[in-house]
Image (cartoon, rainbow, N blue to C red; front, side, top):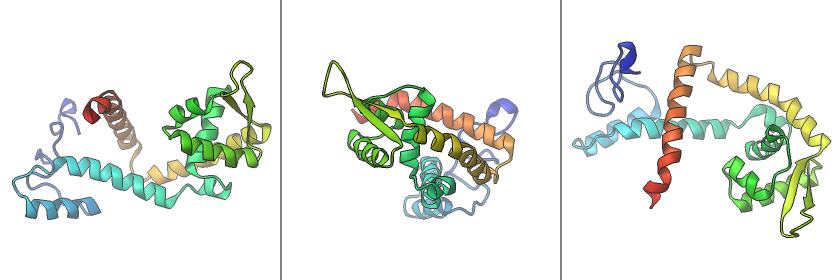
Length: 193
């Protein structure tokens, strides 16, 4: 995937052609068909970005549709588990605002999830002694036990999902996604302005 190991240049396929701009290996995924259709309608446009962003979006959609079997068995959504996980991995109380930042969620979504998780006895809230408008959220013993019990099964499930790629490719993909995410996190504010 990179020029540094003697392979194709960045942004090109295995033949050296840029995605969406010329003949390359035939791909059988749904994004390939979409790209071919757009190329037929607008052959003058570089559809290469669709090949990356379209595939990231399609992978995310498929993963969301499949849901997470261990979480589903525990009666949790991915978003609820992320909230519980944030409390567990940070190891201390968080405010709803901090939870929103940790889980990339809106404040309203966090409030709704906290209400459901509180009713289930998995988290508890306490008011701030100096500012009654501020709440602090922590895991209950039941919440901590649930997260610790699910995590090994969830990681095994995710390992099985990714087993379609060899370990080396998984590492390379993780590195590329980390680089993309880091750069996007630094630039998206400017792009939205």
